Length: 117
Ligand SMILES: [Zn+2]
Image (tube, protein in one colour):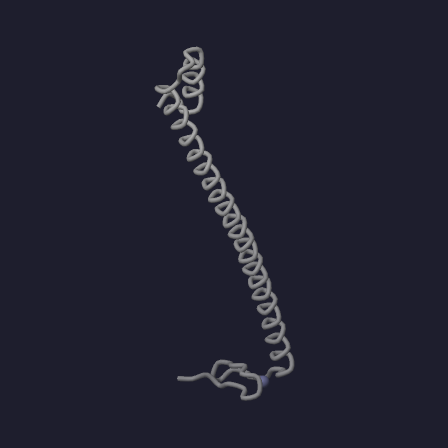
C-alpha cells in the first residue's frame, strides 16, 4: 500500500498521520542536499582530472626517457661499430707489420680497443 504523497514536493507520510508540511522547506532542504552532492561530485571530478593530468605528465616523462634511451643505444651501437672497425684495422696491421718495435704497441692498442677479443 502506497503512502500519501504531496504532488508539489514529493513529501510522504504514513496513512492516517498528519501530513502537514511546508513544501518550500522540503524543497529547500532537497536543493541543499543536491548542491552538497554537486560539490562532492565536482571535487571528485577535479581530483580525477588532477590524477589524469599527473598520469599524462608521467607518461610524457617516460616517453622522453625512452627516446633518450634509444638515442643512447644508437650512440653506443655506433661506438661499438667504430671500435670493431679499429680493432680490425689493428688486427690487420699485426701480421704485416715490418717494424718489430711497433708490434707490442699494436698488441697493446688492440688489447685496449678490443678488450682482447
Ligand atoms: Zn509538499
